[in-house]
Image (cartoon, rainbow, N blue to C red; front, side, top):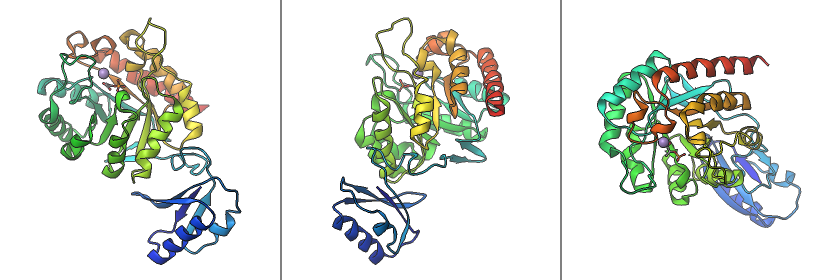
Length: 336
Ligand code: PEP
Ligand code: MN
């Protein structure tokens, strides 16, 4: 059960509501976000919710029996849109393109990618500075200094930044240089990190775990929301299967299913999803048609020389064609 409280509700009215929730055998969890003030009621007893709905200070009440509640469409039918400022909005009514290298490598590289994005009117650049690598000997990113360089070049060119945060202790240091925190597949159920990002208030792109179910992804998103941050988008990035003809299986089933279950925007990562650059375009176009709110993919001036994930990274010529075709596909989708 979700009770939406009236904005600025006096403490005594809130206390009364919490008491009444307890009286019907539910546990009340208070959630205060950038957008609203809620009480999530946890319990199983059947009762007439109108008794709570009539209490002074209650703006709205909904019964949501799923494990995830605040991110559920059962409660909020309107899709969530995330405003990054300067006219960059993610969610319903837009198709967001986020592109850039797997890893931030150098000033020159950032400049070349930024120029490519500006030329193609792409407003969000991806690029990791803290890299989760299978081998401890692989390139693990330029760290905070790399992020500061990334930030100063992007700011000067009107580009927003999405980059991965790997642990709680990095959040504060990264805060001023990031527009969207990415939670990687390996951290999809790092509940301490999710709790802290809930308190951080910045937009978060939450990736599906390597073997994560949609239910697990949705509950992970609930961690962020229930800690006070509604600015969440979900990302399908492929799941591990027995098939080894490609790196992962990009589960496009997830797109319409997630969009039915949650009001949050759904983004697709075809680069990690298939892991082979030759097929990134096909999977991106399929993602558009499946109803994705955006695509995040890897591009680099010389993919063969990329420090990480070169095999799934497209060059600028391929990227330009991909951008053009995704926009055409989105226009077609909107015309249906
Ligand atoms: C990445 O975006 O470069 C990355 C490491 O992604 P994932 O967490 O999906 O593997
Ligand atoms: Mn990568």
